[in-house]
Image 1 (cartoon, rainbow over the protein chains, first blue to last red):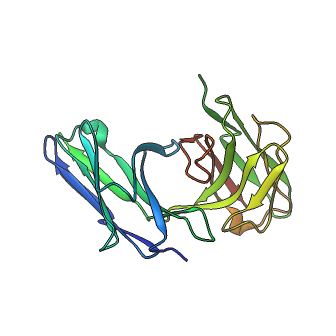
Image 2 (tube, rainbow over the protein chains, first blue to last red):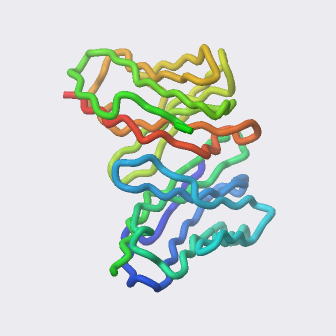
Length: 113
Length: 114
């Protein structure tokens, strides 16, 4: 089945700096890659996603890049703000027999004021 | 616009007890699903539904039952609670064409089994 690895597990940045979180996946049949932000005591919130026919997608301060050959994708947050502090999860959707998301283990991002 | 609503927010059970976790969505989404989240891990799919009357198993279905009698509601039942079912449970929904690609999550039910 699909295996998704996420790094780093914790990340601290100064306010205004950029943050990058990286994920790798194993199943070449995976074709949808969402990113979720989870604040303490809340459910995950979909913040951006990308499909396998696209290499990069941007939405204001956040962007996701996908390298299908290397089977990795990354989340980029620019001009970080304290409210960006949260746990971020990547996931990969396999279009094979499983047809479900496999999640990474999460990255705790702390933006220091 | 409430989105996905889960009740209760917290629950403590004794081993062997049964209970139902409630989930309701007001977005007329076709697809609904249940996930569990354990410390240091991502979410894992328990059961999902593609519409009223149609459900299927996810990655970790043992010990749980679901049914879907309406588009809005998707309850999760624990038949005989076990300590291994201590977890945070999230309900999610997505619109047609996005099976098991959830757009909206509830805020979770934190369940402890003693």
